[in-house]
Image 1 (cartoon, rainbow, N blue to C red):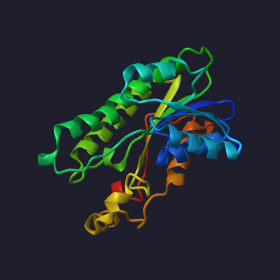
Image 2: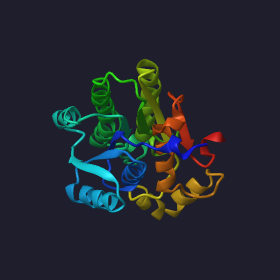
Image 3: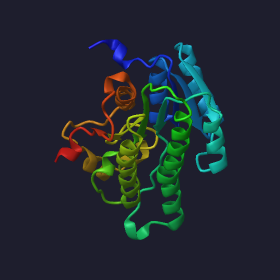
Length: 252
């Protein structure tokens, strides 16, 4: 298989939540593979640090301050892009809690970022993508979770939002074909700044490792590689699919 199938030369990509963790890793690999990547996040300092690392390796990128919960700002950022071929909906959060103890403000925040903002970013991206009359391959990739396919204690809100993301992936894939492909990546627990505090709890750590037949956590670069695959010409006939990188969790 030619390595050219995994190149993104001439493509323009947007990665939300690109200032750290999975988003930063995804953005760096897309840029390394030839795309001009627009890095979206609220954190100016962190964004510039990610952009500097990408540029030092010869990648092309543009950091853009964007609060995805600000509808007008989100719409403006996408409308002002020169073009768009790839969107990676990576921004998201989790506030674990027993269902009976979930606080309404936490419920609203997680729903707003994981579902509403993802939907609005997708809508804005589709509008931008459809401005072009050419038929080149365009792709939307939603960073979902294994929790979009199963349930788990203390994660009722998170599971709900990721199941919603999987539903959006399928519906959008059917509606937007053949112009735009839409897929999701569903990782197991990865070693990121968001998850590290969870693993300070030994009981939680044992619970996780007991459910991963591969016996190890996912690495950020492995998630980025899956995103690159789905964004690339190698996946030209893949749409409406959830690529589970879960070490066998959901196979049980």
